[in-house]
Length: 255
Length: 384
Image 1 (cartoon, chains in turn blue, brown):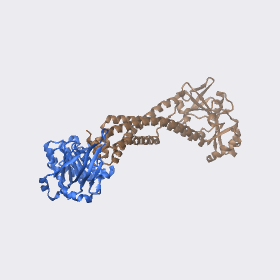
Image 2 (cartoon, chains in turn purple, blue):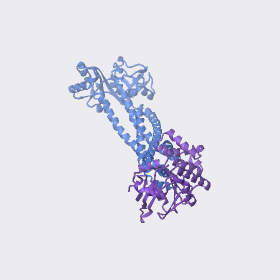
Image 3 (cartoon, helix red, strand yellow):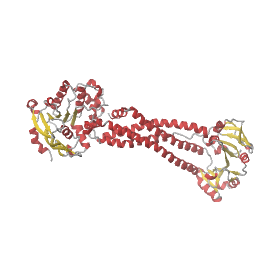
Image 4 (cartoon, chains in turn yellow, blue):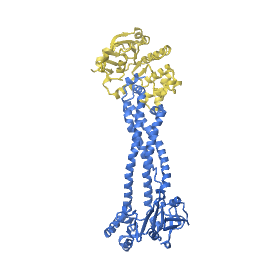
């Protein structure tokens, strides 16, 4: 099952500062594989966060752009980018970023409600997702009463609420112990197996080993693209490799 | 979710929310009390005037200056002239009235005497007038020193039937009756025979004004014009004109009181704006998350605006309650001083106060809501 293709072309961001312009990211090009996990790795300050902000539409690039199929995300308004995030993107963060005043269920219902789902529909979908992540008993708890692993699973459930095409995971295991970290990693593999594009931003080399491809950033530039052969083999024909997508991309991407 | 988010926002700093709501409550409460003064006076006057049977009031010169003049100016001879032509004017009944105020050391001890012919049908002038104790004035009382007290005056002075009310060193009246509560100014008056009062204060043949009942109330303007054409020196007011004069006075005082209230309301609105701004600032990260998962800027704008309005309305609810309490206290004092309930919290006043509070919340919420809608997601998520 293939979904949307996320493509970055000549993506760059320069911040203006009194002491001179700071190039956070420049000339980044990549077509992210569907049904696969693509890890973005690199030391802090290498441009990982900037890349995530641009891909997710949190921020707009100073050069180039981001396309989801033929939709030029970077050219859309705030409200339209919000709509893309709501319906086609999902997010998992290092610090969970659950809304602290909402229960686990309400957190999962949040994107559903924003997308206009009715109360019954919201509740059904949220409960299904919480059950999938083993949180059925914790649905009515506020985040501060959940363990780190539970919170991250709530975040995963929330990320999947509107059945997104792309899931962004920013250091998703950074605040977890190794056992729960492995659980979350496994969950991300499942998410990718459903045909979704998973963009995993991490500086944790062991976590990046779950990825099908690794993009290494250095000083705001894409330094290397590494494929993980075992994953490609294991993923079978569900995994679209980078070169294939790139071949398709120019036709799909208006410049 | 929106109710959960809004409620949590207001309960996040309960003391701050409480203090802000208290500020609004005091602003709204003082507005209600200030404006209730106008409403009370309005009620008292409309009650008074609806209790006045006659359609016209005839005075010597301008009504406002002459009717309540210390020395009555209207020669009673005009009554005979007008009654002589009663058929032509369409006059049914004419009663001369002499007003005299015995001033006291404090406003509370002032007494309003109304002298009118003892054989006059009081009920034709004050339609709601009843007698609670003793008797009414009768024709044979003319020239006698007898009085019927309005109930509030009687209570204030502590006088009952058979006791004596002193007007001045030369004249005292025996209380022969106590009126029932008809409401309005009559309750605070003392009714005495006209000639008795004239003699007591030494004004022969002069009264304050005539109240005139005509055949067709709808012709009041024509009759007034006809009388003034024949007697240019007289002033003739219809009931509608009288109401208009009073309403105009009340409207002016409304504006003044509203102006004072506006200051309190503006201070309250600033407090709300400040609280909401702080709250938005504190929730920058939360708003970043909500925006990240797909909320449009408009959603947060609406959320903060809603919180602001809800906060204001909570304050308004308490404020209206405070307003009722304040008006009650004002009436305790005013009843004691001038035997009138000057404050009235009417439904339209409550509706006005609540609407003003809602508008205030909306206005105060605009700036914080705009801030919330413009939270930069990347920056907000990076915050601890």
